[in-house]
Length: 474
Image 1 (tube, rainbow, N blue to C red):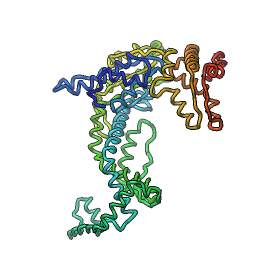
Image 2: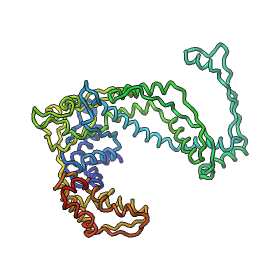
Image 3: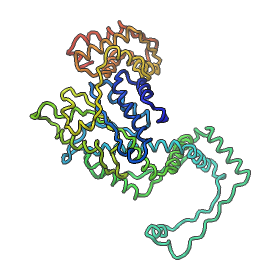
Image 4: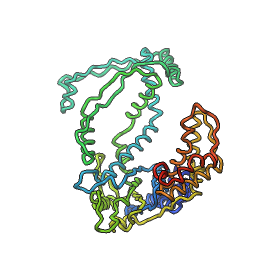
């Protein structure tokens, strides 16, 4: 989608297709996203002065915090990574350092951009793959050319800066042009390959396999060192060719992938991926409440220096340069979205410097019975529609009546109030219990199944009444 068309109203409307309620959180992320587009249009020094306003989402689990950030990144095609604050430890302890979130963001940006580039070169790669298949299926149509075998000693000399010996190497003879008859036969063969005429035919091809390097370092603190060393060693080792017997359809896909990879400039791709990560990257830091120092100064526990983790996250969020294997990455214009339930602690329990780096705070509301009914029926990825299509694969036609939907939403609300409030995730548990027998009996008992209020009550009422049992089952 064109960034110019992504107005805050349009962004909220797109998020409404998947996420129920939480209008204040949607408005906050929509404004933050639009401000990025506004910054890109600024001129001169002011463009560098405008920094993103990071967001802190506060609300119970299962109300849509992660989903809002994930859908937002998909909507704009921005590099996105979700991390958990509890994974990191203070510098000096065994564990992951906070800079790894930036390295993960760069890797996500490279993967995203590589998929785009492979898609752009797909057409040319398909033509080159069909050319290679035509050479294999009918070698007589191949353009003949005398290949000069090069001495391995001249290759080694060239690598060491020599000139490959005193004798000059002869020029390779020009390729012999194909006759009109062979050219026509080859054109017909390529059209037949393109139309799938040879798809089921078995052929033998050479597949390039990169050498596997076993990591020499263990532990997350050595992940960057091990990755760099592994890439360096694999680049020095020769590529291995392995013969495989596959169908023409499979060979066409393998060749197309190989040709696409050859057409992509990896160095230019990495530079552009780093630029995108720096200007458009989004880092979602979940479980921020778990590293807050709530409960007073005397609180003790198994966590390793939660305040130390906050101090380490602070320079990343406020803007610093992180070294990665693809070069230095600046985090000054990366958008950070923090999230946490903050049941046992408060946002004010975070260190003041980190609080100041999340100036926009939005509170997400607990979901009501009406919200549950909407989640079950209206979003593009509605839960009931998912189960309908899943069981339709086994010939079962599911029909949810209004009374059945109302009963599921009512019981989910009650269980959330009586036990732990896990938000919309409760609906997954309820639906699995309601449809357990149907899912087990299908496809032997295919047919129409009507899920009404009585059907739901029959399968869940006793469990809901027994609160001890609900703790374990629902």
